[in-house]
Amino acid sequence: MEKYTMLMSAYGVGVGVDFKFHGLVANTLDAHRLIQYYQEEMGPEVADKIVNSLYEQYFTQEKHPSAPETLSKAATDAGIDKAKAEAFISDEYEGLQDTKMLIREQASNGVDAVPYVVLEGKRRDLTLEGAKEVEEYVKEMERLTKETK
Image (cartoon, one colour):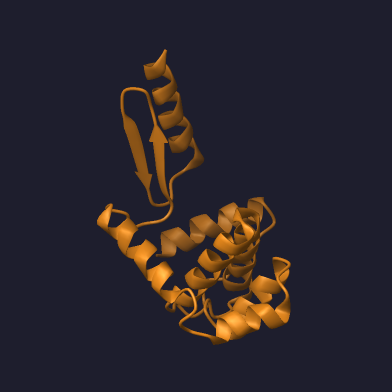
């Protein structure tokens, strides 16, 4: 873990992000529920804004990843009306079954790490699981490109 935090800290400094690693490690189901619900309701751009806010709050401010305040700020940062967001967040069952179904579906497909990237080629697909160096993604994309010529 020490190697990971040192590496991520170094990456962060390079792009102006001061990672902190003392936040609470907690269940993120409610965060996933929020992301999934608003992705379906308002599109992937809004979901991306929610994710970016959640990451910033967790990794730089050490906020609880599924606390109602954290989720509310992420939603409002994404342009969602605060009252609507808080009504959704407070209803712990809204969107829960859909989120759990999607998690089960991905688990049955063998996905158990993020990111999970599938590069589709003409002859075969390549799957990259977990955090990788940028160079590794480039290497695999170049390999698929060569195979398709």
